Image 1 (cartoon, helix red, strand yellow):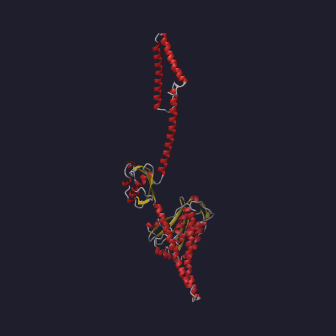
Image 2 (cartoon, one colour):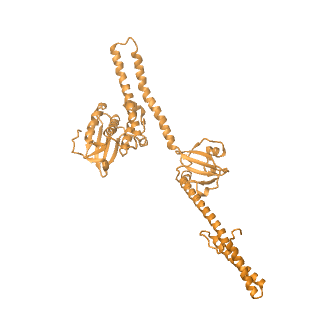
Length: 437
């Protein structure tokens, strides 16, 4: 071996000399040399046995009697240690990559060159019900849809495809195929139901705003064209101007609500500024006075205050939310109907509620009432007025104040709009205030 040192050679020749001298002393010089060689062979055999035992579990540095075996084993030991370090790092990276893949909310499926499943993450099982026993099966047999078949069989297709969930037609999924090395592909599938809903809401919002502005603007432009006529008398001009004011005010109210709603949405998640104690009895009185102008049908407004605590919030925002709730109750209640404003104590805090005896809302519409411009009865809404943004404003104001608008309603029996404020947002009132009923 090239790793033999001078000490190894000295040991070898020393054994030969010792064997030769011993044989010469007994008049068997050749036999003595053979004995020396035999001893050297036994030493090497012992080193070989030690090496074999060490090679089975080469985790510790070996100990050999000869430098040659020690040097060779040290090289193997260092090489193995470097290899184990690299393997350990690779395993850690692989575990990290698997953990990241498992944490993805989207489906990630590795397909071989034939489109069969090799690996997939947990989201795939949840969304597509693909199990470990399905490995090796063609993906297009488990997810049967023409768009998926075309995507898998057409390697050049770059654009994602959209298809319904195999288990729920109301869920829309988007699939994208990414080519990898080794003739493998990565299928990425995500849920785009909410995204499609948001896009639809945006389109509806633009269409609704355009319609809401176009109607009063058309009226204004029509009357302005009439005013341009030279033969109009002063009385007719005043009448036309008076007819222009209501649509102009409607446009102004709509723009004001849009600006307020935009501001509330942009500030969602930020800390409230301008928080102050709000005395609810006084707030009720102000709102009743403000909305009294639209109650030309003599609605009977009742104020019920049993909670003596004040609300910690932004006064302007809370007043706007309450004003929208009361305005809605007045618009959709019959002549002389009763509207109740209540601030009552609950075990966890206080409840703010506006209850009416109006037309009510069917259960299937309740979830969408707080959408912008959503109206159950569009024709009636046009007659009653309003911008269609009131409940959307209420929802965002209450969300900013840590609570949620809740609605109870039944057609023909009225509605109740309410929310609960926890004790942490309340403070004892300075003194009981008398409320005008």
